[in-house]
Image 1: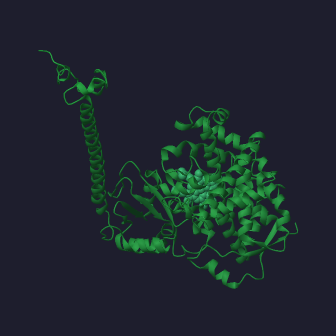
Image 2 (image 1 turned 60 degrees about the horizontal axis):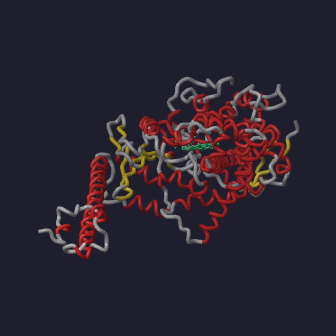
Image 3 (image 1 turned 30 degrees about the horizontal axis):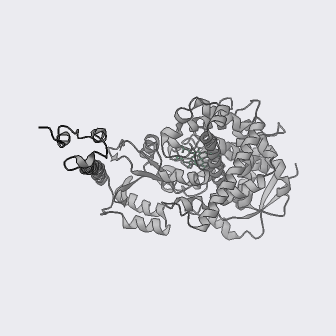
Amino acid sequence: MASSTSSCDSTAVPFTLLGALLTAGPAAWPACVGGGRAFLRDYAQRGTNALLWAVLLAVTWVLLVRVAALLRLWALGSRIPGPRALLADPGLADVLRTGGDITGFLSKLHSSYGPVVRLWVGPSQLLVSVKDPTLVKEVLTKAEDKLPLTGRTYNLACGRLSLFVSSFEKVKSTRESLKIFLNEKLTIGGNLNSFKVIDAIMYRSDSIMSKDFLDSRSFSRHMAFNIIGATLFGDAFLDWSDTVTYEELLMMVAKDGCFWASYAVCPFWKPSYRRYQTLCAKLKILTESIIRKSRDQNSSVHHFDQRSYQKSEGMMAGHSLLGAAEESLSSEEEICGNIMGLMLHGISTSANLIGNILTRLVVFPKLQDQLHAEIVAACNESSELEVDDVLRMRFLLATVCESARLLPAGPLLQRCSLKHDLTLGSGITVPAGAILVVPLHLVQMDASVWGNDAGQFNPHRFLKKDIVLGDILAAPSGSNGMNLSTDCAKTESFLPFGSGSRACVGQKFVILAISMLIASLLRKYEVQPHPSLSKEVGSKVDSSHSHHLPNSKIILTKRRI
Ligand code: HEM
């Protein structure tokens, strides 16, 4: 006998939501055994349970993978020599917290555990310090990625950018185009001899130089700002009315970048952080404005962008500059971010080096006389200084390199291999994701490599046969070449610009640009100490360990030519 309930038996009602909806509808539900509503409730319960199980399984899977990775990290990490530490090395934590002497700390560990030392920064964070020059070279070449922190400082200030980022894959093509762009600046005999930039800067700065005295730090920053700005933006930069504001903003943003980047979560609730963001926004607007101006004058930014877009793969593939600019805002953002990043990095590092050299010049008048004699001898025939002239000034180039050796941009070079374990020639395996560091002072002042005077300023060491200044400069084609020597025992330990896959792409450019600047300056002016410069400064300059020289007041006196 057919009954009203027969339509509700389990065979008649398919156990799916669709089946429920296809039944007679809400009006008919109360008539069913247990009711359609009960069925839906049951259905929802089963669905929710299934979903919760799926989530639970996924979370468990992720946790198991993480735990397996952690166990692997601990297993591989514990095979690397280093102090015993349960979760994190308290000594390192202390040094990091108090901003202490990390080089001294690592030096002690290397002398106890050898050229490769492991430390636990936290339960899941392994740090491996490498000191031996051959292993250093291997690490810097094989470990192609960087720590997220490296790019974070620039990300915070510059927004989106494809330079200085962690992943080598992402930075590769932009590095290549930038290298070509900068090396073209050094092309000798080309139509565009951009080293005229230095003449233009010298001319513009004549009024500054005639002041009673100069603060060497701000003078160096100003010089670095002009060199990097004029190189990236071309002539547009030299007649830009906003250069003063731009310089000031860059300096303010550079000053606090690392501090704010050290926060895991940006403290947007702090007024001082919000002020920093406002400065970054202003800086971005000004950068966009000079990029536009430079493009209008069809100069270097256009050239660099075009190359980037044409040469690169992935994100930027197939774009021309105009296409990218019109089509995709993010690409425009990236150009702006890259240029801001280059300005921030290039200016701070170059200014430090210029300032360091200036202080040496005032403290060691003999050095200055020697350099001046070389400059006069190398360019007495031509009235204007050319790159070729500077390439002949071996003592000047050696002075710049030696100053850079004694003044690395930071205490450590950082690397990591994000995806793969790294097996070193020595048989040690560094697990993927571990932080690899190279303590620069230890490598660049290693007496076994550089001799007992490793801590002293001695440009002559770059003129000896066991270091290839030509390799350091890799003089561009068309130049006289720099074949100063043939053997390269020390070249691998010269790391102020890093080395390997993530080495500084500005190395050759900046050594020549700074040499050109110093040559132009010394040709016209004598650099003298302000009477207030105490003798104490001299002793600091000469001392082995303090290479961040004190800021000095200098006087530029015009030479009688
Ligand atoms: C005295 C001046 C400079 C010093 C001491 C310096 C130093 C450095 C160092 C130590 C690195 C990291 C290298 C590594 O990890 O192996 C680096 C990276 C870099 N430098 Fe410089 N630099 C200077 C000037 C410049 C200039 C003028 C430019 C370009 C205009 C430039 C562009 C870059 C770029 C793009 C990177 C990042 C490479 C990457 O992440 O792959 N640098 N620099």
